[in-house]
Image (cartoon, each protein chain N blue to C red):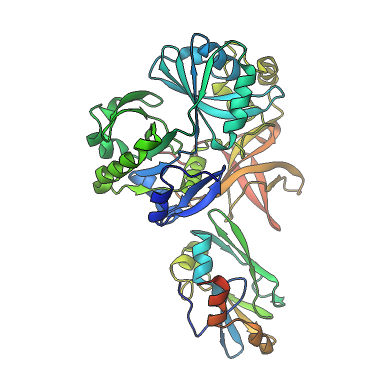
Length: 360
Length: 126
């Protein structure tokens, strides 16, 4: 199992460590609900250095990215990022990712830790255009500094005006005594803030200075458990749960990042699926009664007939009710529709709702 | 780790306090800390008669679900209703406000099969 450059720091803070995607990661420090609140109301820091980073460079970098991803990377100017996904040849998704345009012909792809090897091999297999690929995953760390107080708490650490970085934009600037890091206005929580990409050798210094600067703002370290409840309240997909090799971007509600202005892997079939309408859809639901929906539970009709499956579920800390995502036939996917979640012996009624579950 | 010496324990990390033929049951400090924040305690066996080791309910933490096993045979005569709205009481006070059920025991000989505080301490390696 791999460690991040901060593993010892997490252990010293008393974190509960768990294996996740081949890494020894902090799942919680003081408790998931308290950590969730910290990010919603103040500012928290996640070590998400397990994420993978690929650099795609050269004259044909854009051509390769356009070919393997669904979003239109030609729209990216330097300093902009976009959420995207890589479809496979059979209607599913290899991974979801963020594409950053760092320089004229240099793009950074940030992929899920569990998929680093699979993604690398996949992109390489499609690289008949001659782009240069570098896997930086083992050399780079990633801190997510998230919450409504992130900008205020972190401003003293950079000469760049952090409030001027718009959502899904980034700068390469000084931060916490390091001359060049990527400061990106992205995240997986819905509560605003930044993600900082730096070298492994730099991350401990940054971590320490971030906590010094944030002390007056109530900054705390946040584990993966709260990362999951925070992302689920926003309805953000988690690869391996809500999307995988068998789910199409169209049925997963990722049509907004699937642009048919260009050709890409399996684009003709996905275009046809979009035009005809998918047979099933990923929906968001709230339980009408007490209970906690979880990944793998059946979605049923009142009669008990199984119509789908829960892909993510939790007790929402902000709403104090059971929330989840799951696939159902399109005929059941209307907002306001009643479905039932089979929780052990009981079918608990639930209502299909619009995302996000929690409005910031 | 708090393991009160006056209570009895099970290998499933429950504690039992026997007074006459009434047993109060909850989960141990170790169990609540392993589970993390508890978000729901479901007991649907109120007023039922169950045998020892049958499942009497479920405790749901943010990340996991665990069955609750009845430590002693008998009737489930009470559920701690306060847990409906405040399941976090199990985290805050597992041996007090976080108690879960009361059993009217049908076979008090079973008490001898429960673990002492010392034996439970050894079990969890505390």
